[in-house]
Length: 82
Image 1 (cartoon, helix red, strand yellow):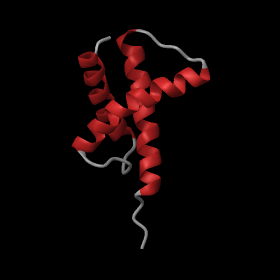
Image 2 (cartoon, helix red, strand yellow):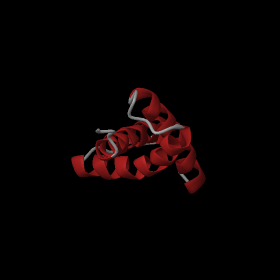
Image 3 (tube, helix red, strand yellow):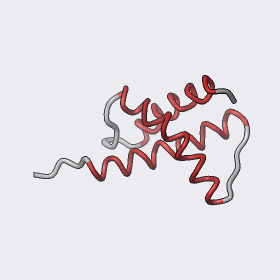
Image 4 (cartoon, one colour):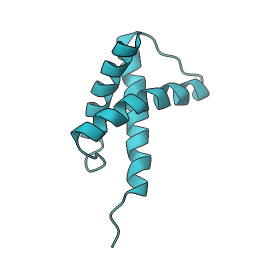
């Protein structure tokens, strides 16, 4: 998959992760950016666990898991505490 395909998958993953995380999202644009970064993170996480995916659906699942992990971690640091 090329760079363009990876970005498109990351954008879709960011959108899906934002919907899954309910309240963990940061708005449409930031979720999309986190989805692209999450694709890289998901590939790294899956590689560390020895899980390898192929095909568009596999890349989408990997990127979505990475985006969810990234949204979860970033929500820990930006919690609104009074």
